[in-house]
Amino acid sequence: MGWLLPWLAVLALGIAVMVLVLRLRRLEEQIAPCRREKEELSAELEHYRSLLDHTMRALQDAVLLVNAEGVISSANPAAEHLLGTGLVGQTLLQRTLCYDLNLILTRCVQTQRSQHAELRLNHPYTRTVFVRVLPLPTAPQAAEAAYLVVLTDLSELRRLEQVRSDFVANVSHELRTPLASIRANAEALLDNPPDDPDIQRRFLNTIVQQTERLARMTDDLLVLAQAEARPIPQAQEICLEEVVRSLVEQLRSQAEVAQVAVHMDIPEGFTVCAQRDQLEQILWNLIDNAIKYNRPGGQVCVRAYKIPEGSEIVVEDTGIGIPHEHLERIFERFYRVDKARSRAKGGTGLGLSIVKHLVEAHGGRVWVESEWGVGSRFGFILPDSRAGQGCH
Image 1: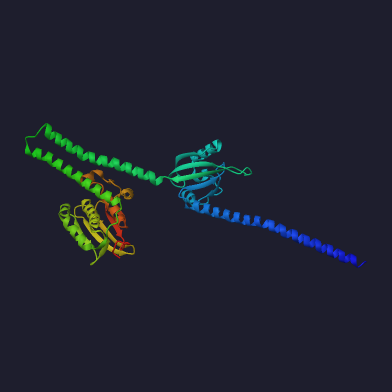
Image 2: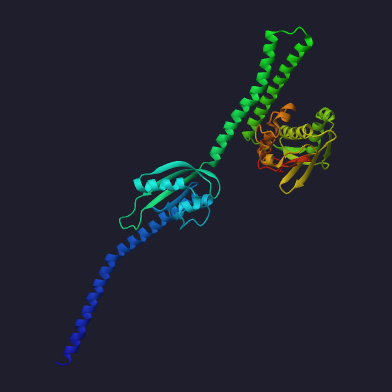
């Protein structure tokens, strides 16, 4: 019987192992659905994390996650574009130097209610922003509360509003002057009709001149409105020399009176891709200004070059020039360097704005170089081809 005991022990051990294996298999079968559910939840969580990341990157508003002290823990690319890189770990006050923004966050922390306001940030550069600060719900075990700060850049919107306001004010001012002159002369004729035909003629000439000024301004405003609408011009191949020669001939008498010589330096057969009427409008304004603001014995030269961007046309003069501080604003509507001189020359203050918008409507760009007392160079570049508009 002694030999039976070891065999019984081995059998018992085998049975125990089999039972344990069966239990392990059953337990594994029970755990498998939980494992699959965990994997599915992990995949879903990763999907939403990726979706949130793409959403934050796509937002144009600056979005930051901060704690109650304003320390930034997360920021989207728009926030880095607005406030600079390296935001995480720094405070809102450090990155904006704006105590009003810090005060809005403090109010949100104290009241646990969303706060909003329009602020002006001067660091790292001047911006007008609309700020919203919202408390975020956090888990009970969370170490600290979190707050969402959203900054919407309103700088361009406010700039456009100012441009519109300035435009209305400028139009009102520019119209008031000729209208006042017309009214004064008309009332003088009505109240005290002059016996002298020369005096009567002088009053009537003034009325006619101011009426013509109003007509020119109205025409320029219409052209500018059409140019700002950015219509896509029906471009065609145009011989630049023919256009410039025709304009110079039309301006010949004006140039002779001003004692200004106009020259061309355009390669033979030089063509540009443009809408003819708009090209003539651009060149007329530039050449007319170059003659008008020149000095007796001065010169105007129209040059043309081929460059990688397309065709570059330059109108160069030896006139009075433009002070450096005015160059950035020279293409604004109604902006004049010398208001009295411009009005005396019959300008409406819209010519260079028209040039800028017509060139941009062609997909090009305009530039200016000038030195006070020496002269100016106005140039513009037109692409040699435009998709769907010919001139390929």
